[in-house]
Image (cartoon, rainbow, N blue to C red; front, side):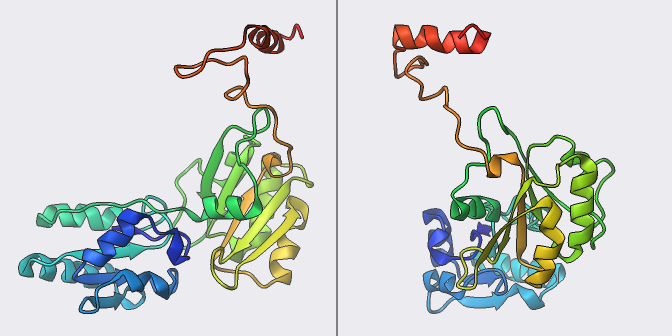
Length: 263
């Protein structure tokens, strides 16, 4: 199970590229991964597009590969641990006695943050990132995992698979407590030639999505950290010590004073 990242072939890890190169069969998501990824595949490798395959079709290939002693690289977009449909494959492979290795990939939310030049965890502003999706789609959300409930934390949120219902998304973010002016980054097809990065607010989210006619391959980052200036990190403060660096005594006293409010 190979995580191919958000699309661009040069965001593959070395391990992912090696797994594709060693595979006798490559199953890839052509609509979500750029074709250049296949440049790592052998010329004699059998290449299959997963877009036209159900789980049963994929499992048939796995069973045939086990019978013939072949290696399969199942190439997923992003990171296989997030909305990858991988667990059902892994469970079935284990039942069949097929060895599985999962190779992580760069998630699209990380790629969006990098493109936007933003850190998602700004000290004293937001120290958590919630990864979720809007309810009401093909897959129901478990109780308590509604966007409005997560929004009550007021921290950074990355929302996948939600562009087709932008009005509902904006309403739940507001209902959960985000102010209308909370910054939002809307990203479409990041790392692809047609990538699009839009900056708006929770209050203008719906109209921005509809203006650009976005409904798939779109991710939202929401939260105050997206516009906050970077505050001073204690980790690199001269008054902070760890196993590889001693603290400067004067800077240490000053840092302690800021923590106790005596500065």
